Image 1 (cartoon, rainbow, N blue to C red):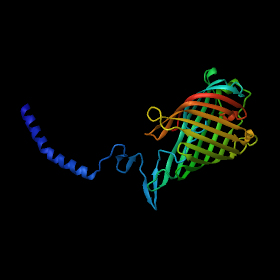
Image 2: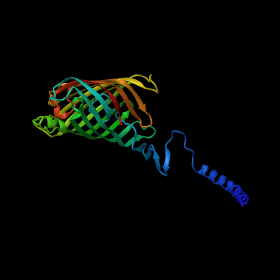
Image 3: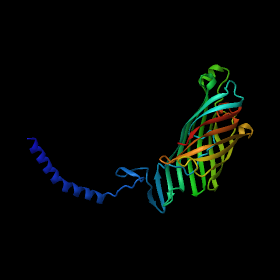
Image 4: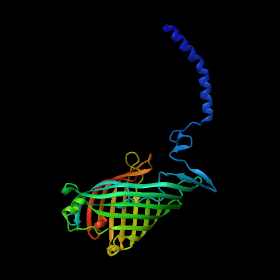
Length: 318
């Protein structure tokens, strides 16, 4: 019986091979092969990464762009990203703030739509949203939370030519005292540091690996009109070397300066240096390095207190 089963099976396979060959040939003629690294079709009309859709008139629409038209400020310690760093404070005016802290930020910037000229997806207009949680924890007091901030914003970027970009955004920043800090300092009450502002930024790359930027912010709503003021100015510079490290890593140096009207325009300075790698699959940057800061507290509820620290950490621009 077993030999008859084998014989019948072999006959069925022999009959099916020509039919299968014809089907495969027809399928290959109907579907073009997908090259390695090109977007793969998950379903008909659904691709990842997304493809640009021609709109006519020399323009195309790209949904969910994976990159930014307006670059992020590398050394800005308050800009949404993912980061984890250990802070050693040399000087602080924050009462019971601790001299050794952990700073954590969870968030990033995410693009929705990009309208770009046909043939050049790195130019045009882009709509994006950014959001983050930022908190500091006192290592000397069982990681008590000193304070935290919630930040979100909606922005429109425009890159008319390579090396030059503009961004207009509406941002919300709300600062809070940590529960443990308030328990240890019952006399300290929240001042309602809430700031909603419009910000206009410009980014310029005069050289291939050098970038300069400037930004103006104007608060259209303040949670405490008696203490908080409307104006903010910011500027910075960033430089990175050619790839010289393992797997195309580069060295970089970035400087950021910001001044607030509510602090009498006294600047807060951040200097960050280290090594950076680009995660090609996500079109994002990963950095490891050191950061020096001298300015007002990064937690808005303590904006009247100045601090100076040196930190080591990692930063990932999600």
